[in-house]
Length: 558
Image (cartoon, rainbow, N blue to C red; front, side):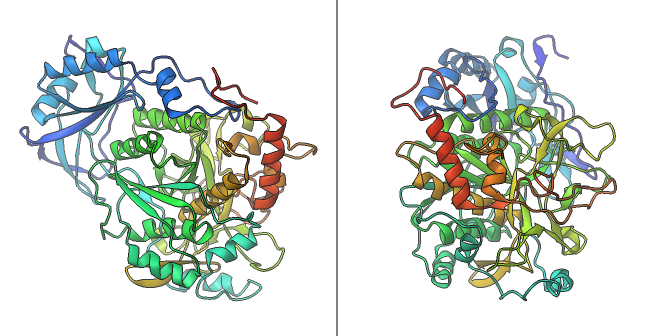
């Protein structure tokens, strides 16, 4: 290693399985790299929901990067020929631009172009290094390697076949699709249409198409909501690249359930840098100020997809959301316990496996208009590659079990695994065939599903609950509350506010998977929402620890 450089922890990259080198990257090409810097002071872990949400300005003042650190990074990097094109103390970022030759020099690495079946990419192997005078300041560097990381939850186009056998076992054959209002009634959503609330959606590809939304709203018989698009890194907001169905599904589920809420869509590239940048954009967005985010994208933990530094920084940003009073709903996956990896093991999907996410699994509705509970979503063999699908759910191999899950006795099906974070936390309808959602995309109406529909459904519920809380209050970091006792009962808020799912499993890995049963399980979490009961339980919890007026010097926890 160059003596003037220091190895950057967590930056190890391996070759993607199946990739082959095409040659060294063009040294004269200009690229951007984003650095994540240390905080002024460490951000404490949260063991429950903060009583007091910090404003963005308060948060940046306490936990952002210092201007002195930003200035030092700019000075040192300029000596290597890199230009600082943007910086943010609140997001702890410095964005650098320069030639690949200069980037290779400053990070002590060689960049190559690789061919891969999932898309060619520019990448590297091994650790990054940084100038030694920045070794205590820089915590991550993103953008040198632009392999595709996150993948969309949307299933490939499928016909009736995958669900036809199960459909006969249901109480009644479904219509071609159901409208969001029908799901809202099934899950006992509270009153309101989301007026005064903003729902954020994070997307990686695809685009927003107003004509599709207008046609959807006509079929759903709801007014057309205001949608704002934000490109966080120059990514198109109107791309027809096959991912537009994912984007429009997210938007339309929210629109159908709370049409008076504002919807802001953050677009980014399908890379680690893209995920980090999109989350930062939402956290720093004072103008739109979303109270809840939904993310229908992810990938298995590590698995030569995520670097450790990326997982650590994304987890930190989700912790920021908890401090800011923003609920982040993240789909748990659509390929069962294997999460679409064929190594035989079970895998949790990231970033859904972060303890600061509300991890959302999938179910099938068997009795839309009755009182019967949903069952765990499992179509065909549970794998999208075979035109099936099933809910994600697993025990993390990366994140330790948080304190608020200490009473959960579930162990990993993987031999020798850690006692990790269990997902999902909750679930909702995801079935493509038996209880499909209406989707309008590319001018056509069609049935759709997946946990990519369940996640925005939960986000819409959070927005409605926020609208029913006292002025200045938000649901915020809901996840740990679900595992706490509800006021005046011997039950948890999760069991009071959700309908238990007790049937089905997500077994797609060779080692097995997880089954539903009474109480919490790693196939359905606490179950599907009973919106009115959940709202009442949260209101009672907040009444026991009321939000003080004005800013607090420190975010105490209840």
